[in-house]
Image (cartoon, rainbow, N blue to C red; front, top):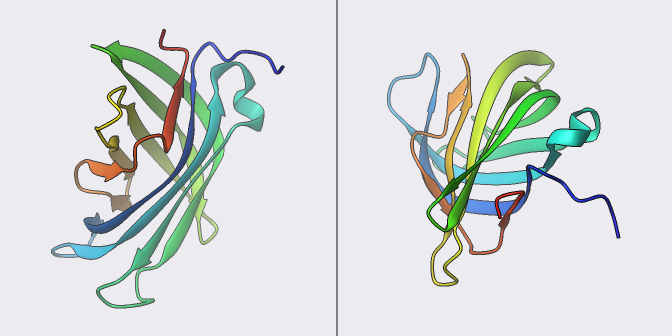
Length: 144
């Protein structure tokens, strides 16, 4: 058994056909979002988080992968039976560093989708609202 995490999130999720916004571009771009995270407040130095975007509207034009290189804070908040985990830090897109904030909602109800409530890469990208992902693809840690 590993060490219990008092606050964190495990994410392995895909959300398809989202209209996202890129800083400096007019309008939105449709595409698929792929989220991966293994974050724990007690092991920020070894925590991982990434977001990949696959442009399905203009294939290949706006594709990118964001990889966190410093996770500076993780907060867990109980909302009813659900758990909301907010992750802040910095990361890289094509070698350029940006601050980010990601908000993940683990829905308890088995019929409900989990939700990536927001993912903002300041000065570069905004997923532009909540993105539903399959139930069980977000596992919040520490919201008992």
